[in-house]
Image (spheres, rainbow, N blue to C red):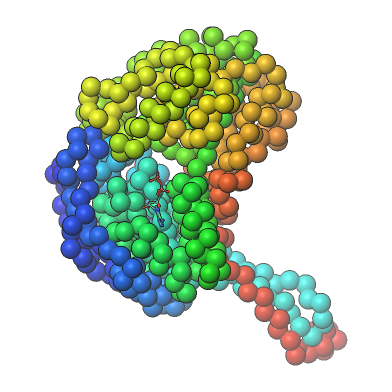
Length: 489
Ligand code: ADP
């Protein structure tokens, strides 16, 4: 592990009830070179239960604070995250592989959610509604839902945590986080900063270990009221099923299969620029990464030609090396998926324009790749590749493009490039996705509601909508009042 300015941020124990506990035993590996950078405890059901009990004990005290008090602690956490951003990004790149600049960007993005919800804490309001009776009043309280469990993925080891727990904590909930086994060290560094920021013991817990055992407790424990999950659709369905027994709210952010449509009136240079960020950021390992480029046949060859240049300039390597734009993929399984998708596409008639093989840099490095001649029959049309493979399809009509885009049962992000404003409105309205980027390939911000429809999920993170998820409405009928308007009373 690289030297940190503040080595005490490198925590190799779980964070439970305000203390770092557990025997570091489970190896955390740097995907760039396979070296072991640290160890974390491999905890199970017992620790998960203890964490939920701690969060539950802390809940009344935290929920009982004023919004301003909660906001102040969140604000302090945000400041600490930004002050320590280089150390946090160093830990993040070491365990996840993304280039250091991208990791720094993620830390700023993670902090933006904490900042936004520190502010939003003060704006969670109830209602006083017109009453059905003169001697009664209808009050609607908006109260924190209770203990929140957050199960998070490895592709954004910092931001996927703050995006869930900052709004939960702002609303007055307490949390138990189970980070991905590949990237627990960023989560534990964030926990250390949360401790310093002044969250009371038990308000924030981070448990590392066995996903199935811990997930089993988090989805069945009576005290957990909401399970927030970002990850694969298959695991999301399992967690939803498991949560049925105690009727928990389940907030899911699952996989997508993002289309990127280039119409014949598009600005092709802008489309190429958008294509690069939406396809190759984080080595294609984001749930909003383009998985299918649908290109009007009349501009197809020009688009492919223009795309080749910047893709050819991408630089693979260790995320700490200057000038590197593409890190390793996260695991062997991830590399195998890219290879399988490519082999299947080639067997069904696709052609390689660029790349198409592993890099000699190391077993998890794969060359940025472009293939043309992709069709709906290929695996890469139905499944997310989650890697640096740009598959290009042709279409002839607007209807055909929209129908193809809407084909999969997922509906997270979609992008399209066009100039005709009537077409822009038409297509934007017809796309069955939770998020649509028009003439842009980069849509994520804490200011907007992030989330999917269909099998991509059922919740929103970011914006004022993101905090509402963590509240319950309570209707209070206040009766027995003096009859009617004060003037008649
Ligand atoms: P990926 O395949 O990209 O790793 P997953 O959906 O498997 O995505 O993982 C996302 C998160 O879900 C990780 O924190 C992982 O440990 C966790 N996870 C995986 N399987 C389960 C499960 N059965 N129960 C609870 N959590 C799980």
